[in-house]
Image 1 (cartoon, rainbow, N blue to C red):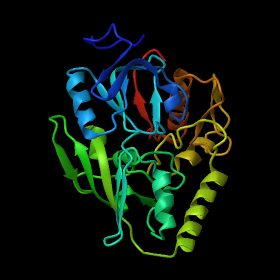
Image 2: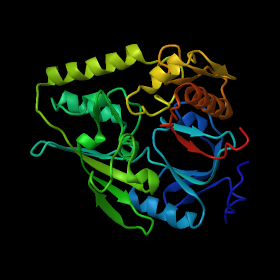
Image 3: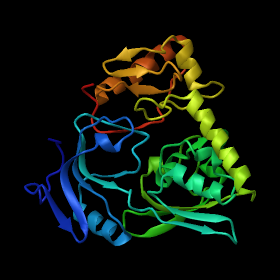
Length: 310
């Protein structure tokens, strides 16, 4: 049982708030790419803005967290207190052929959008075909690969403020840095984003570029076991994976969590890992790398819940 705020419906396993079903003690592990973590105290999947507003009013003073694809996330074994709101149903997509703009809902999978753009011969998003996240998460994290990132193509993102208002933020407003934005320091829900793609090309060329990027990721990174992708941000002048590898940590294991032999910046769930195993391995890697190189590796992965006992 998750310890958390008292709720006025604590005795109910689930109930409807308008058209949105609010459920209690929902397992979150199946909703993350690491396949670990405890339950949400309360969980809902709004399909439109009105349902989202109703959920925020209902949640009142309890903690609220927003779940996208769960691909860059470590949830504690104890779970998450308060209300977890999933954006998986916010999946509208609009291509404007006149401007080259793409507007996509926060829950749209990034690879899906990248392939749809490529099939139209639009260049600028092919780097994202292998990133297992959503548009909302990509905006928050300034996701990137192959020397490109969201900052390069973002026009504006619509976000939902705590007071119920919706505002449009530009890349300058988001204060983008390497895998960072103001939305990490001051969390708000991303509703949708508008992207500006660059050179128009042929469908064949765009698909070939996208396929090349995907092939590179599949041949250099492990996809055979659950992971969150890259665990650590690359420090200045170094690759995090290189530092971990040179520290002799490839294959190092704690419980069911292991540092990948293929790419040392990946931690894999070998089938029976707990969140505590992964967290302890992250901390061990940080300690070993710091002791050898005097460099503090900063996790790229977001962490939810209490790991104080891990």
